[in-house]
Each structure stands twice: as structure tokens, then as C-alpha cells.
Image (cartoon, rainbow, N blue to C red; front, side, top):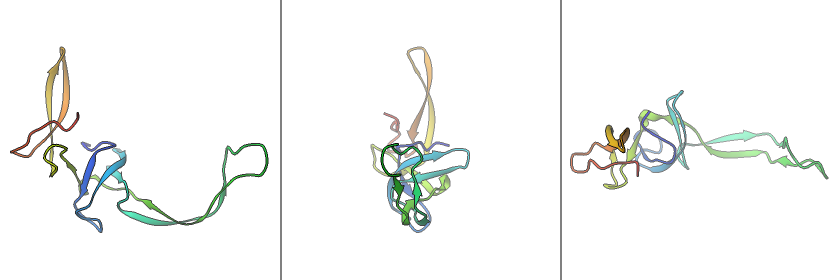
Length: 119
């Protein structure tokens, strides 16, 4: 999976098509990513006590109600936005030699850009 936590991505399909956001969580095992403030779903949560609340006084409670939170979406529905050309792009992998080591680097696949994405 070529998308990592912290990448700026653009949504390609679904209710948030065309919007951009940062990746909060990447789940390579499921081939899914969670994008900040996009693909928001509502969850009805029951109030629950905190596990490790302080021993003194009353037990602290996490409030219940309807909570909005971002849901994971398939990694095939997102595209990384290149930091130099500011456009959604496919990702290429180049192997570059640095200090006697081979390093894998993600690069922009746009013909007029080709810059490194990891900086």
C-alpha cells in the first residue's frame, strides 16, 4: 500500500468525491484508510465509565449520544496529492542510492513533475 499516515489525499469516489484531507490511519491488512473529516458516519454511543479513572471521588463517565466520526474507506478510492505540483497523482517507487544504501522513495508519476513525495 503506497498511502501512509499523514499523506494528503483526494477522494475519488463516494459522497465526498473531490475533497482533500490528511490520512489519520492506514490499515494495510484491510486495504483501507481513515481520512480526517471525510466519510463521516454517525454512531449512537451508550455512556460508559472510564477504565482507568482516578481512584479518588466519583467514577468518570464518557458521555453517550450521537457521535460523528470518520469511517475507513478503500485505498483504491483515494489518490495522493503531490506536495510540489498540488495535483492528485499516481505513485511510483524509485530506488536511490544514498550513503552506500539503497533507499525506496515515492515519486510523483505526472510527466511534468516527477518530484519526490517523501521529504
